[in-house]
Length: 187
Length: 303
Image 1 (cartoon, rainbow over the protein chains, first blue to last red):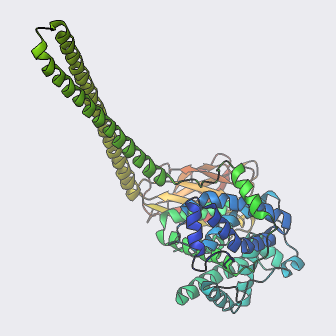
Image 2: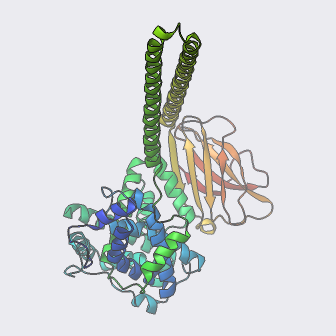
Image 3: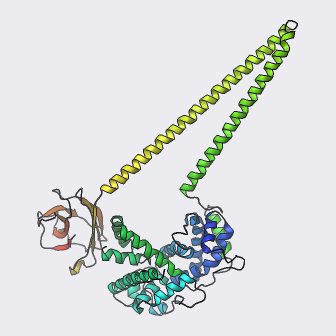
């Protein structure tokens, strides 16, 4: 993830730190790198490009205010941005009544799959995560991927996928713990 | 670690919980450091899934719109500084002001000393001619006295300013000491707290959606009860909470519980006779106003 006018050695984390010190140009460079990933996620959650663009605009404006608190020791830049923007998108879904509405299976089928290992757009950590995700049983992986991409609560996700709520809960629980274990092993 | 709390932490990592479940997890996290650690790890892992999202180009001009949004939210193009940074900047500003003030006072003192020296020299020159021009010498002497008085006054003012600064410094130190003492006391209070958090569900079919959570202070023998999604009772009935002391089979009344129209309740409770330690809890359905001892209509039981 680098733009043409940014030296390759400047990491996303460094850009975000500079943004925290008031460097708008660095913040815009970070947007150039991360904006596409986040917009793609927001489109799937909101299921409406116009609303997704609004959330992206408001979310990045709030990230600018919070950038001073960013700590690269704790978290990488893109996940940090996701961690801040996803709850804002969920709040917007709740306001629009989309958080508690069952999603038709035909819509779920259209979910853009997460990138798989070997995709050249992935960095080293992304590749490790893709490999680990692939190792999960299909039902666990599907619930985690759909849950992350669609921003639904587990009751609605279970209903949308036509699986019992308790089963969905258990599979997400087991899947996330296994994924954590695999990633710790990869580190 | 309670597997139900672990499950909530996994769901929370993908923002899949509703507010009542978030409250239960937050309550459990207060008493369980390992749970808090796991929750943080899972939250970071959940966010890292963002690395795998295939990018899609956002609308053109988006950067311009973000810049406009930054301006319109009143933050200008400077990010908000953290409290610690502000304190550090304030400290530096105070230090700079103190240095400038000291420099100014020193310059003023030097200038007055020079004026004093010049006046003394002038008098020395004038003295031989004093007899000839006694009136002029007297005027210079008056001038010198006036200058001395000025120097004295400024010295007094300087001393008073230094005293005032010392006083402010002393007050600030007292304030810091007081805050540190309060923080220590809070830490001590925190260390003395011995919470037990219990989340109960039920096999009773009519109440299967209900959740009961208790936060019990083992040392002080009181607690907080949270009920959610409880079934509405008939008009002549009430829910009643009971606390069972460790090693005992006698249930002590802890009050009648009135749930709201959503079947929720949140409030403190204390058994009518003191109970401490690892107590168990029981929720029953009783006649309106409560009963002396629990009936067989037990909804939640455990702890």
